[in-house]
Length: 212
Image (tube, rainbow, N blue to C red; front, top):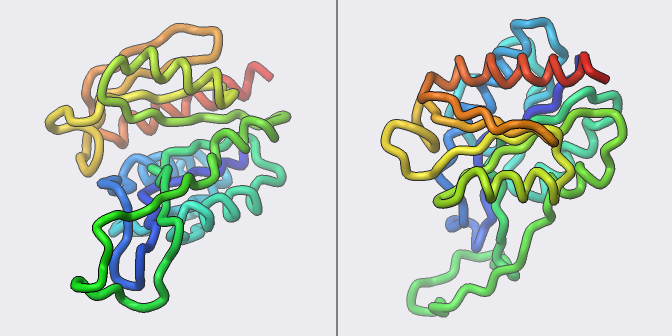
C-alpha cells in the first residue's frame, strides 16, 4: 500500500526567533513509518521539526508550519491507500508575523491568534477510497472526545491517549493508547513501546484495507 504518515510538531512563528509549538517529539510517527517500510509498504513521511534520524526506505518531506504540512499532505494524496495523521499540528497561529525580531520593550502582552486549517477535516471531506487514521491527545474523557473527533472528521480509526501520564505520550518512548474504530469497539491497550504500538496500528490499517 501507499501510506502517507505525518509526524512531529508544527511551528507557527511570531517573528524570526519566536514561535508557538507543542511538545511532540515525532517518535510515534517515525515509528509508524519505520514499521510500515519494513513491511514493504510505500511510505511518504511528512514531518514537522523533529530531532530524529530519517527512517530508511521512506520518502521524506520536511515541513515547518501547519500550512506547509497541509500542502504537503494534499500534494502526496494521489494514489494513497491510507493516511495516518500522527503529527501534533498546531491549532492556532499568530494572526500577524513580524518580519523582524520584536524587541522586548516594544512587544505587546497580547498575542492575537487565528485558527490554522483543519487538515484532518479536509482529508475526511475528500475521502473516497483511502483509509483515514487520526490521533487524539486528551486531558479528560478521552474515549468520549476521541469518538466525537472520529465521527466529525469522518475517520476510519482513531488512536487516543491521555496527556500528562508519566512515562507515556509526548516525548516518551512509550505510549498508553486506546484504539477506536468507526462503528466499532474501543480497544484499550496497556503501556508499551511506541515501536510495538506502531506495529499494532499498521496491522489494523492492513485489516481495514483488506475489508474494502
